[in-house]
Image 1 (cartoon, rainbow, N blue to C red):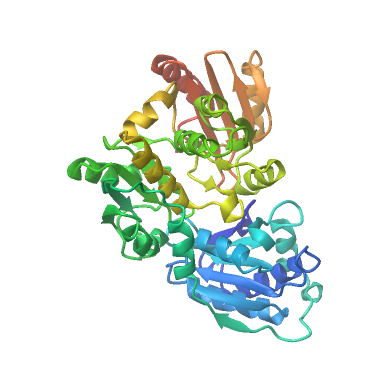
Image 2 (cartoon, rainbow, N blue to C red; image 1 turned 180 degrees about the vertical axis):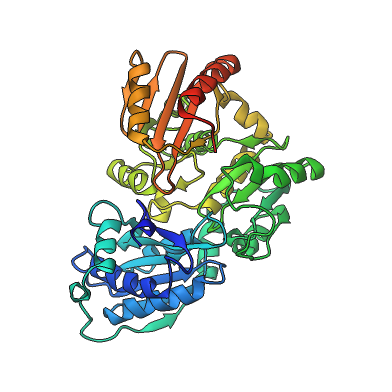
Length: 453
């Protein structure tokens, strides 16, 4: 059972070990987490779910747990995770729960939590406390003085108006041709918004289907972008977009049908944001290319490197009132969404950039492609700590950063190896000044870590 409680959320295979019984216990336990919060007076919890067939029954028991504890549930139904976050902030709710397993395969499900103001549930008093309560003695759970209520609420129209208000299409600007791959996931619910955005939308796999019949809903894996890349080339599109399963992440493809690293997309959006707030901070994760902090500084911003994970990025952004934040995995964070991630706003930032500059997307990216960089490479390693210690000893001549796993920098290359927070894997990313040096160092590291999975 404890294997379903991850660093940032709850996730596991349905119905064993994740099922309706544990969903009820999690609902009751999350309610205890809300007691004593800065918004204790708020009694609403926003709940929604994705398109997986077992999401609704899990949500029903989650809601039963919340109302048992005395919280009133605002059920916004089928929604993306960013819509849930936004509703929590917009409605002044005590917290929120999205029932989803994000990009994981069809047999998985889970829960993503947030607190008042869409703040993440994190630290020892976050997921570990929910686990202790949900799996411990039942008398730790306090029943509400009165049962909570459940009301249905539709936020689609308000959310659409909010998102569309961020669009900056100049008068007379041409209609951009944009291919969007929803991967049969929750990105499909953005179709009405996209159709109002003044673009020529070419949709791929917009049929909601939790079995993911076409490909995995994970834009971080290049194999999942093949159809999108091919369609961009076929129709001569200006931009390609791929959403993940719960649509909190977006991957981009340029006008040539070539994938664009999400770290470079972070740099593009950051520079655009800094035009309006020069001198502001931008938070990026430590797997990002050296081109990211360089571009932020060149645009007059303050780059802040942070460890991987939405809870860390969001906290650092709040601390420094950052104008923007981004992760290599394709999460993009905005202060106007309560510092939560919003894939659709990232898409609109790219559209704004294309309209304002009149340049092709590949032309915008070209100045940032300063280094040769690997994708994230995964390894199954029994002794993760031992493997990282061995690398630390071998590459002791470099500059060591242990903010998340180990990152070791040399003048002409660097690498980061860190244990996954969601899977039993070690993850490797490296970058070098030349493709030849990258290939050599990648082979060197793979020889020490074993064959990638």
